[in-house]
Length: 259
Image (cartoon, rainbow, N blue to C red; front, top):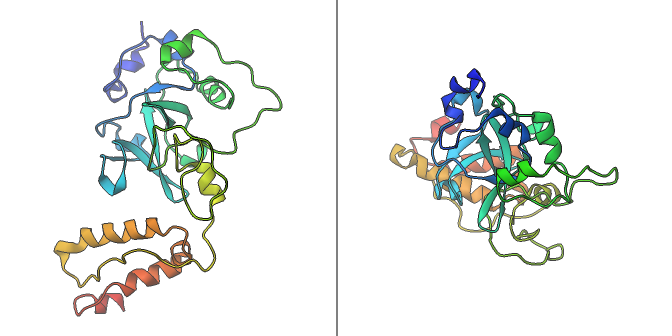
C-alpha cells in the first residue's frame, strides 16, 4: 500500500504511473523520463520554471525550462522532485536531482530517498539505464575518491541533436560542443564569456513606435536578437543592453516615456 500522502497531491501522478513506496525508494539516476506536455505543476512548486511548447521562443521540445546562466535549461518534475534533463539518442533521461542553485521546490512522494537520488546522479562514469525499473534492479557502483564531474555538463539547453560525433577542438566562435547529444551545455556556458569588443550581428529589431498591437512582436524579436548575440559586449552589460533597447523606441507615443 502507498502512503496516504500520495492520494492528496494528485498533480504528482498526472501523466505518470502509480508505484509503491518500495519502488520509489529504489529509484536511481539516471533513468528514462517523459517530459510534461501540459503545465501540470502548481505554481507554488514550480519556482522559476516555466512551461513552454515547441517553437515558443525557439524551444525545441515541449516541457519545463528554467533560466540559468543565460540559457533555458530543460527540467522535469518526477513525482514531486525536479530533475535536470539530458537527451540520449531518441529518449530523455533524468540525469540528476536539480542542483540547489536552481531553487526548485521539492515535494517528493513518500518513500523517495532524496539523498540516494542525489548520490546516484553524481557518478560520471556510471552507464545510464533506459528505464526506472532497470535502475531499481541494480544499485549504483560506489564512487571512487578520485572521480569528479565531467568537464562538460550534459544538461539540455535549447537545442539537441541525435547524431553522435567526436568532440571538436575549441572553436573560435560559438558552436556545438560535447558528444553531439547536447550542443549547448552548462560547461559550455561557463567557458564562453562575452568577448570584449564583440559587435552585434544579424538583422536588428524593427523600431517600436508605440503601436500596442505590435508590442509582443517587438519584445520577442528583441529577446531573440540579444540571445543570438549573447557573446557581444552590449548583450553582456545590463546598462548597455538597456540603452540599446531604449534606442529602438522612437516616435511621439514613446518619446516621453523613454525620457
